[in-house]
Image (cartoon, helix red, strand yellow):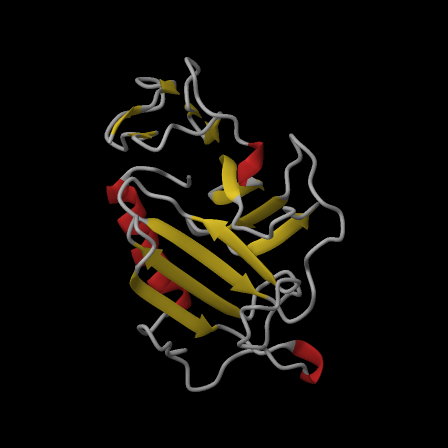
Length: 213
């Protein structure tokens, strides 16, 4: 549910490839020598998987981006749920997951309740990767969904919730827009989409509604 506009999503993927230097399906770090992870809040390995609506993989990028401190290795085992944060980058035409793998356990023990913000991340790119707060985890460990995006001093801040906490849209707007923020209010039915036009200003479309796919 992250930026439903397909054209903007393609920009996000291109920036992800540039920022993290992904090198194709089998991964290619692109560095002769990897630097140490600057903060424990930074992931050591990243993965983007793009899937068709039927679940089949369209394309995959993955790469180690830094070396863990203290002699710890950056695992390549994506089944380590306590070290992995998965975020859904759902566009209008495909399903995409952006995974972050950390050097140490990051998953909190507490399970999210309805209305809880599960995860807060920030960064200078449209797909931020620095962990700010990981308050609680989803009971099914499935990818998180974007609830709110704000921009402060050229830095992007995202707040994520569990998908089960999104109510189906009825007559309410699916998205509210402001000059420096986007807030997702509910989830559109499967035959509809919540699409924000990047060609219009937030003032021109303060509320966005579900439209047919």
